Image 1 (cartoon, rainbow, N blue to C red):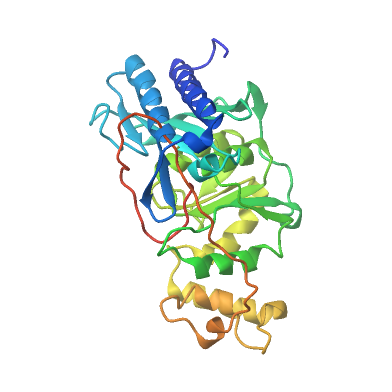
Image 2 (image 1 turned 90 degrees about the horizontal axis):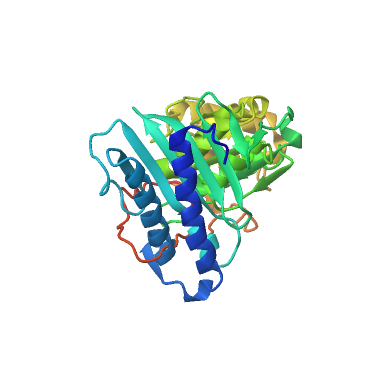
Amino acid sequence: MSSNLHPMLNVAIKAARAAGAIINRAALDVEAVRVSQKQVNDFVTEVDHASEAAIIETLLTAYPGHGILAEESGTERGAKDSEFVWIIDPLDGTTNFIHGFPVYCVSIALAVRGKVEQAVVYDPTRNDLFTASRGRGAFLNERRIRVSKRTRLEESLISTGFPFRAGDNFKQYLAIMADLMPRAAGLRRPGAAALDLAYVAAGFAEAFFETGLNPWDVAAGSLLVTEAGGLISNFSGEGEYLDQREVLAGAPRIYGQLVPILGKYSKFAGVDAKLAASERIRATDPTRQTAGGGDDVYARSTVELSQPTPEAQAAPASAPAPARKMIRAKRPAETPAAGSDTAPGTASE
């Protein structure tokens, strides 16, 4: 890479490429990779562990006084009180990886006093390297990238993640799909949140949203998006999203059209707002009525999730099936899953 890159970004790139080499070697015989299960539908492999170990070793060799927050080992390594913290996802898209589905990546971010300053997302299958330094723009393989110029939601491609854990809010996700799919050109679920955010930054998709994500899923991608001219927040448009397990990112004009749609599904929205949104949908969109002319099942399900309405129980059997499994992979190295939060929501494999 260019010598004019920030030295800490250069170290992160070196770490990401080292992890990518481990992942690519394992991908040659993915059926031989040892896989364990952190919880239902949530997997980790020896490749995840080996990738994480290589990243941490590279970073701490260069900066032994820095802190570490990694998906598999948490804060076990690194300094505990440093203002510099590396946020690491060694293999985002583990479920894809163990199936040989070539959509996964390495994600590394550096937060300084809580603000992400450096970011690397590396796709080892395509040798695509996304990088960003705060105030210096976002790049794909050393070429400057910008978010999409599209301004109409109906012409936009939106990426997301599906719920996949027991306890996830499947009804709410179906409500979001019913709200959004008729309004957008397409909805995609590639299966690696960090790469989804990188693709928004590069203009390959106009927006991305997901719930249930952890800081290591979104830290690097968030800086890519903002440095590429995009916006990122929780569903309600509030900026403190990194630890809120709720993320919406997109090109400014598309992001602005998505906040009113997704805001009513935000865990930060009140019940009154959700009920009001439900009434507006029923009053203004007759296509959202049930076959029998009843309530909008999907909108109501976001308000009364614990007590499904009779209408909801009668929802069409053809409603989109939500769940899809996600996974993580790894090789010899240490690392128990750190800070895993099983709160309802979706999450990247």
